[in-house]
Image (cartoon, rainbow, N blue to C red; front, top):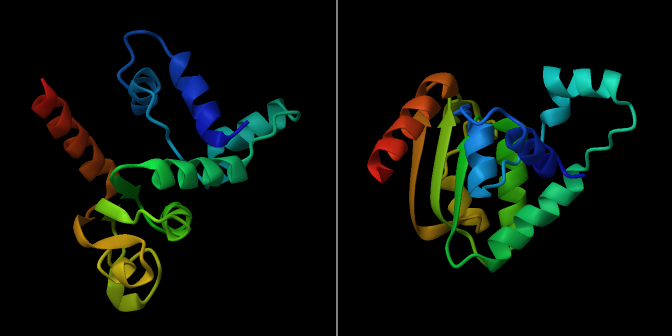
Length: 158
């Protein structure tokens, strides 16, 4: 089972009155890709208690490549940097459709030269973000910025 399939399963099995991102994405059939899931406390507990569970990150990468390949307009929302950013950007590198829209929420800055702080503008040179894309990097803690962004989107859609 892919990690995104497992996260969808978790979201589907949350109580009906739960407004978590897992529940909402499961209801809307929006995949959540979490390539570093096995580095989380939840994954460690699952691994200890359900040793036959086999989560496959490569299925998620193939699913992400297929989504981007087939998309009329590809877009990305990157929360953090490091593994999640690398995962999605590598997937886009293998597609004919580079991201037309991109948002990154990070605390990392580009001056240090690391991937997490690399600008989305830099991704244009690799063909990961389209040269005419609309993109923005939000320098903020994700636990602050993501809830505010989701609140705004929810209010905008009502």
